[in-house]
Image 1 (spheres, one colour):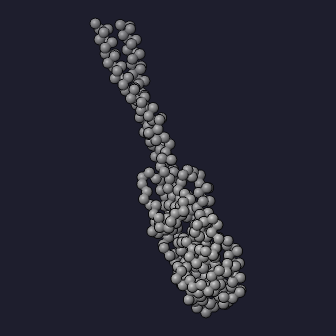
Image 2 (cartoon, one colour):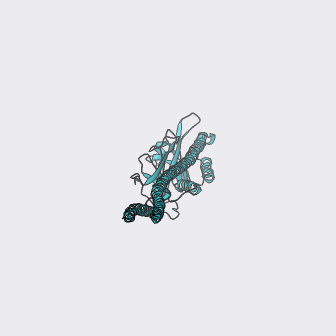
Length: 311
């Protein structure tokens, strides 16, 4: 009888241990599921903060450039000096020197004929059909990125296949408030690339984060992947595998194609702590299964031993 009790206590202890393993392992799993959920929320907050930061830099810089150019267009020199004068041309050269991100600055008359520019490449050229002239005829204008048309073969591309730029323009009035022409400056597109890259490098966690600059039609203007994307390529065919944050820019101008948006995405799998398919959880599942089998087999062994003791 003593042997039976000893066997009973040993079997009971093992059964309790197996039972605890079978209970604790699922509890650990669901606890980790909760931790993964919180980690994803933190990662989403990081992406949102990065999007807001990039948008802030864009808004501040774009609106500053628009206002700076507007001040130049409304200056006494531009109001009282002929738009083809050496003095005004010198002012354009000084303005470009102070803003090296501008690859071209020029003034067209009311018919769209360029009368002064820096560098001096397009004097006498008809720009009446260009968006910057039409958009800046009556209002401040900020256009979408585009490949250069008139300047494509006149300016260095610095290793790029095509020259891409953004146009900013403002109307020029004389001292009697009559329209004299349009002042325009072309931003080298590397300006936008640098803003995104610098903020991305400052991010606390930039593990395979993709940053896109898209226009109002959701067409890609820039991708941080470094690919030379054609204008008009759509990347919003995303799915539940990504964390995504989108933030629109508020640009104070008569924008050609609506407002830009910053879209940031990151694969969820890169953010999770330990997915259930990992070896750790396979090992936990195996232990739980073996523990349950031990309980079942132990029960029948104990019954058989108990019956043999009673014989």
